[in-house]
Amino acid sequence: MPTPKQDQNYIEKSIPELKNYLLSDILFYPMGQLPRLTIGGLLLTQKRLKAGNLGTHLTPKLATIKRKWYAAWTKKSATELDARLRLWRSYLNDYRNKPEDYAADYKHEVRLRVMLELLADETDQMPAELIALDELLRAKFITGEFLWDEDLQSEFNQDKFWFLYGKIK
Image (tube, rainbow, N blue to C red; front, side, top):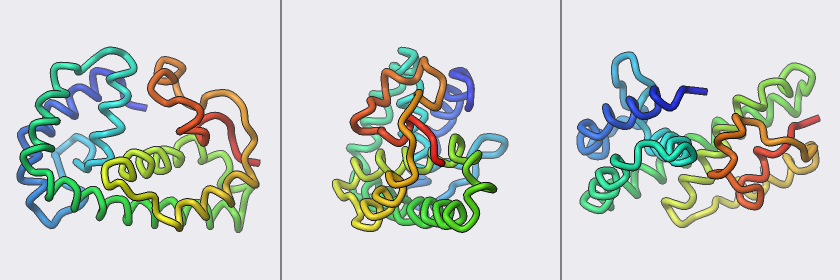
């Protein structure tokens, strides 16, 4: 998990690139040594920063860009939702075929599911396939402790982000 300073740096460096990213055909936009720019990545980073009451000065800048380029933001969010859904499906299929090899990866891979939730909010659509995948996940899910740093828990409530509160068999 990135540090708050790394998260803040990611958003600060993303803001000047955001218009070009939104208007490009590139979904995973390269940013040198930083993680690739995506809407899902920005939303997840923003939530992590919000949990620590950091980066609040960046929120209005992101909101302004989103409002100004709303059609491009929504289109890019929908495209990313489809791409992240394929990645999540692939992970769950791998897990289903060899649970002993893939269960330990859940703590890291679940960030895809978090991004799917955030992207679904952006696009006002919850894909039927994601609902079906959640049903499969629930059958193997063991409710428990919050998976990530407890400082982040305030931004990821258990009702909405139930998949962060436990592990898979």
